[in-house]
Image: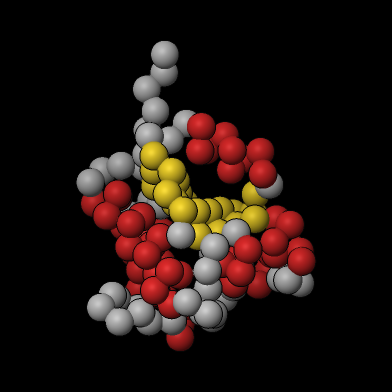
Length: 122
């Protein structure tokens, strides 16, 4: 049996809940610091986090600003997946997204989850 690797963290909150929007990136950075593969999946309102300029104003008490966490996460090799139907429903275009955000459909998310050691959801 193939050994599973890394962690998938599913985010479902944006600016309406700064703490729950921030925690997936805190966890993702921690995984990368532990030399684990990490993917953050943005679904529901969390897709706004990948919209250029949106995360600049999100800062949960006790944590680094969300934009800083996202930049670190991507620089360290983390992946950010953005739900295709979720951005379509919110009229967000691919050109509106931050660099390195990947638009994906459900099959990609399920495949990533099935191959991960752990899946977390916020």
